[in-house]
Length: 330
Image 1 (cartoon, one colour):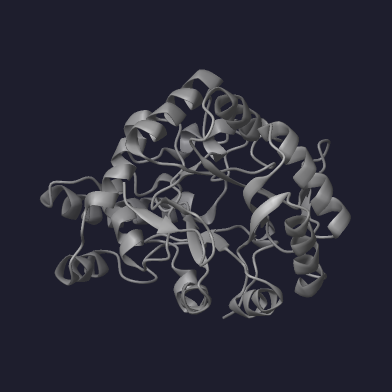
Image 2 (tube, helix red, strand yellow):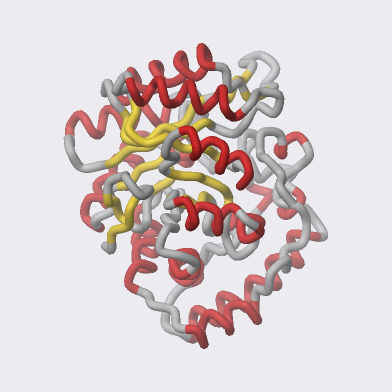
């Protein structure tokens, strides 16, 4: 497994990480044994970068990781996130970036992970009314106290990143990025490169649309994020599936699979990109990891662009309520 830097001053980690949202059951039923098996597969493959959050099953994913790393110390660099507040009775959610709430979130995450320090801590999307300077000042205090290593932000605008980075180094920015969600190409990927900040694409397989097995919206559970998503409802879904079939055909012709090719495309977008596909399946994880050994030349990249050109996806990636917390910049 090739290595990449987690920010200019950060540690070297596997170029492909693992997103652990699925450990919480968000994409279908799972159990801790299945998650632990996936983590063991990470070790076998040389994947040492884990991404989690308090919001993944109200801390469940962190607890699973905490128990596993207690039994297998020194195997992973773990990143987690805080700042998302959810009303357990109504399900309503909003983002809080004030220092007190971020501290409360961080300390709870540390307890669940069973550590007193986390290598990378993200602000889990932005509270629109709160100045980025105030948020960054709080994160710098956590860093000075030794509670966190690197500072990260999720779905932040390039302008906000520049303001924060001027106060102290930001290690990573995480945003959705894949062959069907290319908004970051309009500025944040370039800004990260300019500043020496790692860019961490989540959902590099388009929430499953680029997987070998086509997802079936009829099977989505009540808490599945894709339920009601514009891209997974008709007529958009059928149109998207038809387009992706061309990509799967291209991958098969190259002797590979669509997940491997999609993640290899992410890696080819810049040396500072570290995609974090999410899965609870060891077999799927091996497909993802194979991307690190798949070199894409200019001819192949051009063929991918022909099959899935910029803006090809039908429907928005979020519903209107889901856009809350993601900063727009174009």
